[in-house]
Amino acid sequence: MLDSARRSGIAHMINSGVDLSTNSRSLELSAKYDFISATLGLSPNTLESIREPELDMLFRQLEENADRAVGIGEAGLDYYHCKDAPGRRRQAEVFGRVIDLARALDKPLVIHSRDAEQPALDMVKHLDKVVFHCYSGSLSTMKEALDRGYYISLATNVCRSGRHQILARNVSLERLMVETDSPFLSPRGGRNEPSFVLDSIRLISRIRGMEPQELARITAENTKRIYNIRSSTLP
Image (cartoon, rainbow, N blue to C red):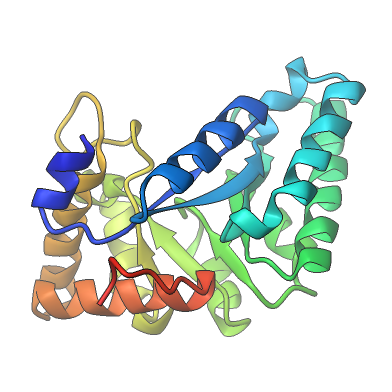
C-alpha cells in the first residue's frame, strides 16, 4: 500500500491515532518512514469502552509523545453514533481536556465532528491552529471556521457526494486540505488507501477550473504550513 502511494506520487502521509494502540502504531510508522508523520488522538467513539484509568493513561501518552507528533487528534464530538445526552456530555468533557492539551502543547488540533461541526467549532474558538478532519458540515459553519483561519480537510467521499462537492466549490483554497480517511470512504468502493487521494485532486480541480498539479501544490503547501512539516520527502 505504501509502495503504491509512493509510485502514485504521494510525497508525504499523515497517520492519525484515535486510541492507545493506534497512537502507538502511528508513532512506530513515523519513526520507520521519513515520509509519514503522526498525529495522536482520542476518538469520541472510543469513550464508551474506556474507563478513567485508561483515559488518564491515554492523556499521558499524548503529552509524553507530543514532540514526536505533528498534531493532536483526531478528537472531538460524534453525534451520529452518540444519540443520548449523557454520552454527548462526556464527549464534550473529554474533548475539552484534549483542547486544553493541544493549546498547552501549541499543536494543531485535528477535529472529528460528525453531525456536530458547529458545537465542535464553538468549543475551539479560542484556538489558533485547527483542522476540521473529514469535514461534512454546513456551508455556514465552514465559512465561520475559514474566517477564523482554520483548515478544512475534505475526504475522498467528495468523489461520490454532491453535498461534499458543493463544499469543495466554496472552500477557500488557502485553507483546503485533502485526505482519504483510509481505510474508510473509498471513492472506488471497498478499502480506501492513500493513493486514492489523487481521485479527489482530479475531481476538485475540475470543480474549481484549475490544473490538478496546481491544486496538489496548494493543498500540500497548506498541509506543510499547519503541521509545520519540514520533510526531506517534500519539495
